Image (cartoon, rainbow, N blue to C red; front, side):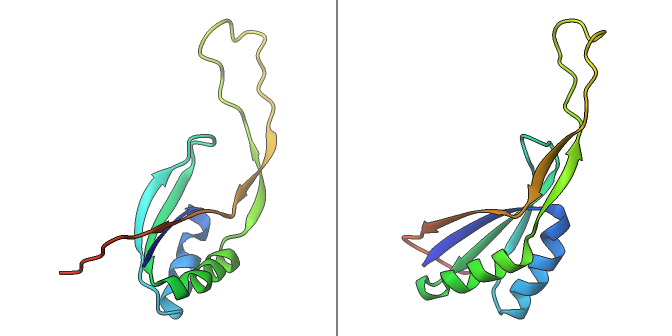
Amino acid sequence: MNLIIAIIQDKDSNRLSSELVKANFRATKLASTGGFLRAGNTTFLIGVDDIQVDAVLSVIRNSCKVREQLVTPVTPMSGTTDSYLPLPVEVQVGGATVFVLPVDRFEHY
C-alpha cells in the first residue's frame, strides 16, 4: 500500500478530482497555500495498492497542466520603498508536486 500526496494549483483541482472519480480512485482534498507565490493550492491524499500507483500518477499528469503567469514580487519589508518599483515576473505555475510514500499499516473503520 502507498500514500500519494499530490500538491496542485487550485485551477486544476476540480479536473483532477473528476478524473480520479472516473478512474475509481478515492481521494481526500485539503486546502493549502504555496509558500513562494502565496497562492491557493489543493493537496490530495490518495491511498492505493502498489500496482495502482502508476495509474494514479498518469491521471495526475494528464489533469494538471503547467502554465505561465505574471507575478508581481512582494514589496520588501525593510529599507526604503521609494526606489523600489516591483515589475511583474513571468513564472511557471501549475503542474503537480507528488510524493509517493509506503504505508506500513492501513485501517478503515
